[in-house]
Amino acid sequence: MTPVRVPPGPVGAGRQGNKRAYERDPLAFLLDQRRYGDLVRFDDELYIVNSPALAEDVLKHTNTTYTITRDLLGDEADGGRASEDLARWMHARSLAGRGLNRSSLRAAEDRLAATAVRHAETWNARGRIDAIPALEELSADLIAEFCLGPETGRVPALVARLQDARLPGSLPLPGGRPLRRRRLHRVGRDLAAEVSRLIVRRRTRREGSPAAVADLLNTACDEGALTHEGAVSIVVANLFAAHETTAAALAWLFLLLDRHPHVQRQVRDEADRELAGGLPTAADLPRLAVTEAVVKETLRLYPPLWLLERAVDQPTELAGYPLRPGQRVAVSPFVLQRDPRHYDRPTEFRPDRWINRPAAAPLPKYAFMPFGGGPRTCLGAHFATVAMVVTTAALTSRYHLTRTPGTTPAFGTRTILQPEGLTLDLTTRDPQRHREQGAAAREAAQAWCGAARRPPSRAAR
Image (cartoon, rainbow, N blue to C red; front, side):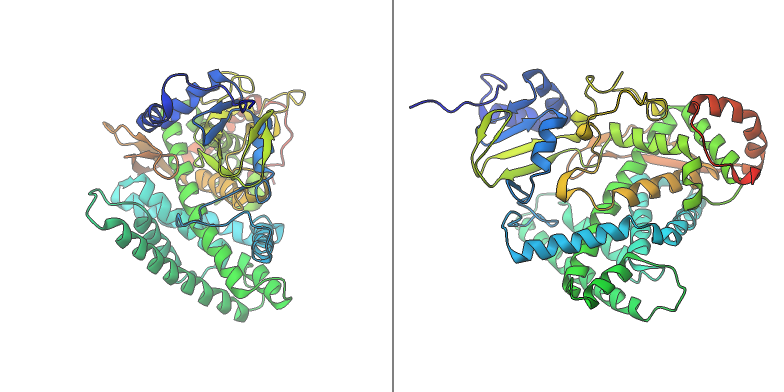
């Protein structure tokens, strides 16, 4: 009998040895696996992908060759069946994606900065914040308003409760897991009920009021393309996923700006110069090139979705190696986005790489994939990017956000990649003084940005 060909991998460690090494430091373990090639055998059941081409092959065939086997709450999910349920769910997901990326929702984008500043005012009154919880509260408000309109009811509070219920307690109490599972489902039902109420309420909104994703979903329900339950499930999934990942990414961004004061000054100078003291709106985004580059570089170095996993549903091959149903394939955006084959000095924080990158040297499609890829890519990718740019510009133009002295954040990989233990100090800055300095900084900023043509600033209009 001909032995089955398997990819190379760590020799002699055995399944438990690899598992222990991974659990000690998941990120370092995954980075080390690159030395074995583009496809690595972790054990008989799990292979690791280390190239954009193979990542694309796996992710674009999700729902067919590969499946997602767990849902938002960690329950078993049959994500690969070619059924009417899956088709309807994917259709609902597509509609929500259009809503989250739709240009007609520009008015909703314009509200993002006001929401961010409202939260920052409460932070400033305290002077210091625990970054992850504070930014999760902000992100929950941002995505709730974007999906449901200005009236968000109990949704942000319920999203926070769902997050708390999802994470295990500090003490492994007997019977804690079943209790946590029941709490998860109870809070999930409460959140779904509140979202359902607000989606229905959107039907009676006044003419001319700002649009929201829920309006698009209501129209789809009226046309028979979507059930009300489907609309609710999609909004709930996006509320939970987007608030957690956006908060983590913003926490990394503020930590990186604290570590690189010269980049922080460039972001502030750009905001002073381009916003003329006002809050950023969707129309300002094309002029915030430095801020957008900082957002992209943050997502490259610290993608919240640091590891994606798919289960093999149909017999197939990957890089010439056979895969059988039941095996799993892992793709790490954290690893792919630090590959020296695609990025010069890949471990360094260099936002200018996104502004000055030569057009003749495009990245492979899946070399930058902070939101995943394929049919199950994160629907909130556009929203998260816009929210991060707007929030960064709004807050850095009004406040100094600095890491609390003496604190050392740690990599947290329990759910998403986040800087655990990060606290930030806030002090008010004088935007008028910095706007006056902005004119002097214009020439330097334009040189840093290259020869890219941008719309005129507010001050010049």
